[in-house]
Amino acid sequence: MNNFEQVETRPDNSIIQQVKIKKNIYSFLKEYNLINENHFIFLDRSIYLTGNKLYFDKLLDKLTMLLVKEGLEENGEEVNAIGEAIEDTIDAVTAAIDP
Image (cartoon, rainbow, N blue to C red; front, top):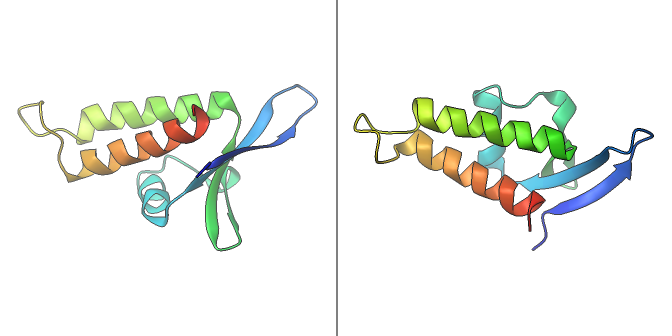
């Protein structure tokens, strides 16, 4: 299933993209204030992140920093429950924008 599509090209040539995400990933992103209302839409009972490549690259950077800060056990080697959610989110966004 392709969860990514080009929606429009703006005058400055930045491509706006949509990435379909699951409700639990949406909830996680909102809980940690990683997205705002300008970067998601609800369409046909589905949730989509919207933005250009730069936006998604920055989102992945934020997720990676959050993984290091909150997602690892004290030994720093194994992921905790938050880390698993972060990894799932990173995987979903990466798979959608970098097929």
